[in-house]
Image 1: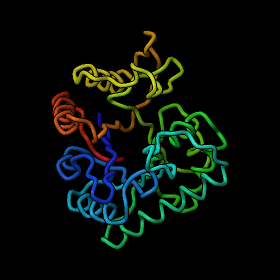
Image 2: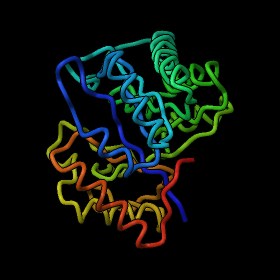
Image 3: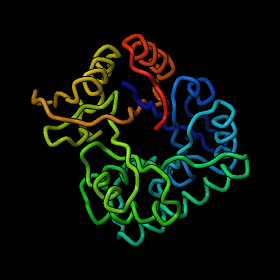
Image 4: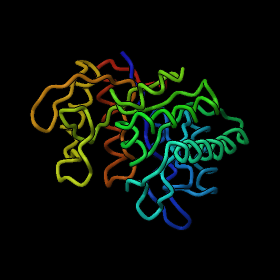
Length: 250
């Protein structure tokens, strides 16, 4: 049994530093690098790519809404055509840095509100999948397990990775609990680790209303910007390996 551990990185901006990118890289198998719209900037993108290549970690583009102030977590009204353009633009920007450093882009994972909106909006999901496919049909599209984004990726002819979250709670529909709710985040490490293990080995997760729902886990997202993100990443990696679950990118 194996699983991909992914983490969002490159979210610093100018003189503002977010996360412990270099320290967390050896603990994960793939990273999603911010492309300058919701976070990051050209210098941060280059440095993050360099670190990821040195560590041998698979590199993905993490395109989001053009919303630095809201960190890409606020829903914006966009047409599928606009979504296609902004995703294609951001993939191309990151790919330029990856190629210049001798690496190759591995996947694309939309960020924040764009990701969540595409999970339930088939038109938006199709536009994102089309942008990825037209840029490079060999790229893997990461999306919420059971979502419209995964379906759109498959329809477009892309390989997809069904993503689950270590520190987020789920609704009975399979959607993530909105961050505006108090119960959106799992704050206890033990609870988060047990949720991940159940999703991987039993292919199920318990929703906030106590229902057991089926789920597919190809890749697990662990956030790298929390107060104890580094310690949590090390702990979950150790526990998964101790349980005989290997960690590697798709």
